[in-house]
Amino acid sequence: MRFKWLAAAVCAAPLLAHSLYLLPAKFHAVAGDEVVFSVHNGDAFPESEDAADPARFVDAMLTGGDTRSSIDDFKKWGKATHSAVRLPRAGAYWISLHTMPRALSLEPAKFDQYLRDEGLEWVIDWRTKNGEAQKPSRERYSKYAKTYLDAGAGDVWRKTLGLDIEIVPEADPAALKPGARLPIRLLWHGKPAAGIRVERAWALPDGGKGVDVVGRTDEQGRTAVTLDSAGRWRIHAVAMERAQNDPEADWISYWASMTFEVRNDD
Image 1 (cartoon, rainbow, N blue to C red):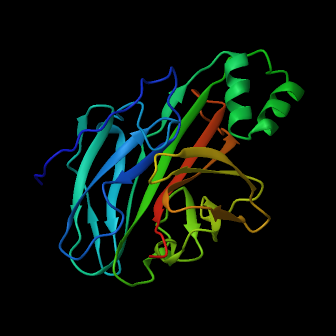
Image 2 (tube, rainbow, N blue to C red):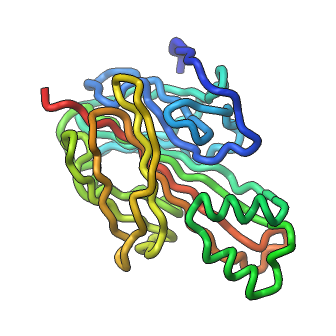
């Protein structure tokens, strides 16, 4: 697939880039459009801080009402990685992908800070109680990203994609207006994930942006995200579990993101 690349100004990469998410050039399109989208890596939403290696992408897919097609043409450009999809017919679509697992080791203080940053304090407690507080971490992580494109009416927003960790909206993101609350459900290994911290980030048309914590999922894996203003939005969550029979890792983490756009009433 050939298309024109769009360059964007981005910030310098930090030592460790965290969130991975998808950012299309436009969230609202029409049938037949070719939509460029970018894989962003880092914590400076909506800017990307580092270009993810496309060799690590798994199951990059465009999913619509009766569409499920793979995406395999990615290129690094600047501080992001890019591709494009053509929308075959009117309706709504998900673009999704995840990364191959990668091992990471951090010294104890840095690991503790990372766990606090992601609301995983229970892991700090476990390490303390089990004599691992002063040991470097041994973690294997993978990241799961999806973005919602609106190219006409449909209920594709209801569709789960079968990701190992997945943020599932329980209302149509494209139909919501500023001030609305978007109910979501977090699924992990296909089941509701309780007690997981959820974060929201936003980028407004006037250049304003921010990030804060929404709260934690309930016993059914549910919470709701207030969408204060029009703009681009990202929802983010991380779950972690103790590794089983893995000679290279003590912990396995799963990173989830979902992006979409809220439009003004007019």
